[in-house]
Image 1 (cartoon, rainbow, N blue to C red):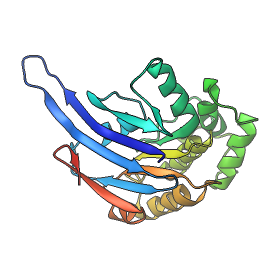
Image 2: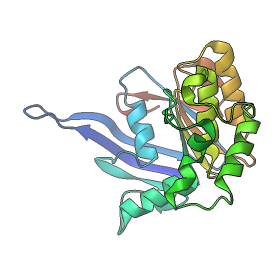
Image 3: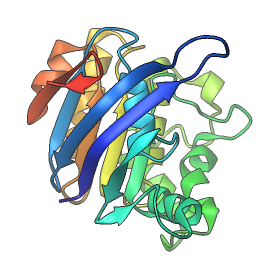
Length: 223
């Protein structure tokens, strides 16, 4: 199993108030190449869960394993998280999170600059990925010179830079019109060289329907 989530709890403590439990014993398995959608009302904790799956946030209790390796427990867990994020996980965000002062090639290269991965020539791979997502003619452009759909294509290429096994996508079509969103979904599921697992948080019924299965986060539980 590529991704294993075991009894994850997440609580937020506000001084003078009781703890707020956002995730209450969430468990989930995702196989290699499997696509899973997570839906639910705003504020249900979907993004919090996605951040924990990628090691960007820590659970109050529970564990996440990527390729059989735990993200949060054991000696050297912080270093292990960095290595696993760099080598096995790609992230796509609703708001793109591109560096405005870098051109699109440099933005795509960023994940390869951690020193935790080896992708040959990062610049050449970035250019090849941008060609695949239809931006071969925009290599020298800054993010501000691109449309929203083009910026999300750059973000997709960046997520694929280090040949991850798992993509974590937080509302990847949320800021896009319907047609552009459909194009991004097609690229997300088809552009990679090898089978790629994906966990996607989405409000889009179309996006969820393209996944192998859809789960709802409700009152801290996946149903």
